[in-house]
Amino acid sequence: MKRTVAGVEAYTKMLTAVLPTKTDTYTPISHIAVINRVRSEITSAGYVITGEEYRCSNDGQVALGTFRMNYKSDPDIELSANFMNSYNKQHAFRFNLGGLVKVCANGMMLNNNKFGSYKRVHKGAADMLAEGKISEFIKDSEEYWSHLVEHKDKLRDELLTSTTQHDILGELFFKKKILNTMQLNTIRSEMEKPSFDYKVDSDSAWALYNHITLALKDSHPSTWIEDQMQVHEVFSNMFGLEEEEDDFEDEDDEYIVTGHLVKEPEEVMIAPF
Image 1: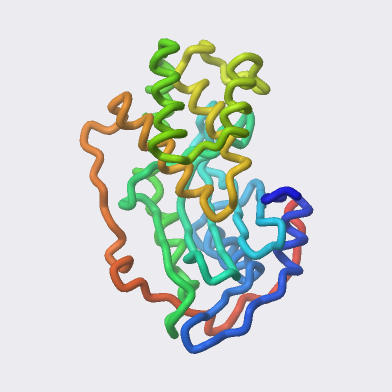
Image 2 (image 1 turned 30 degrees about the vertical axis):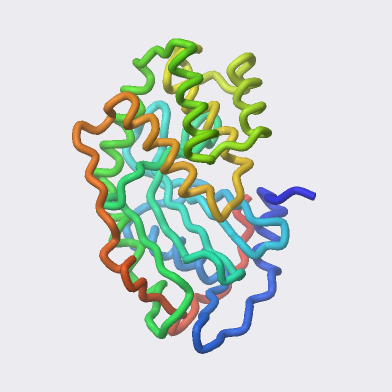
């Protein structure tokens, strides 16, 4: 049985998964409430959603959503908004900005908390999906987008030796423990015969980056956002994508405040496909 499902099957499982009971220490938020809130916040920020993609655990308990947004034009990538929500009491709600590679919908996510990161655990009485919270990050996406494009262009121009390629994969597998053996096999197959044309040399860092992020589509929804950020950090450190990579922690993470919706958005179940 697959750990992760995608597309229409995932969307259906997310909408039909049973919402857990609220307790004194746990406040669940329905997946559809999150979806509708993110849709609303993107619209409030003045953006148009051009596509939605969903993945979830096989039981629908952990949900992951990615929203494509119309933003500044780039031939290779586009801006995205991403969320992770869970019913299993093991993971905090999470929202991040990111990028999507146009040709393959691979993810690209900066590992730097000063850019569009919002994380709250499922407890307390505060409204973790309060109106305006997510749109604050979306409206302030200019710097994030600029860094995405700059990093992508640097990776396109960087040619790798086989030793460097193996060093990167070794760090992600042995040290970071992000990749599993199945994903390594996917990457090897992609290096030998790519499924997509990234318009770069086959030894380009951008090509390897995309082979890796393509394999990450098989990551569990609960780890996908963090996996994306960790992969980007490895490339950033290896090639100096940031001269000074500040690591800002979310101030609220020390006492993480979260909660339930005071009033959930109308549950309009519109299939995104």
